[in-house]
Length: 61
Image (cartoon, rainbow, N blue to C red; front, side, top):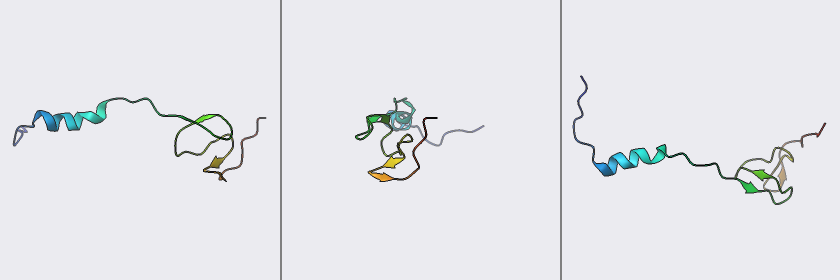
């Protein structure tokens, strides 16, 4: 049977559990199109990232 070598303090236990909290994903409004997108991600509708054309824009067909 596995036995812990030493007691885990409340502080260390809290550090470990701090990442368990669920956070809502952040969205920012795109300056050009006004659409909501994730920060540091390509805008999939326009294909732009930081003012540069990365992908071809999606067609609305």
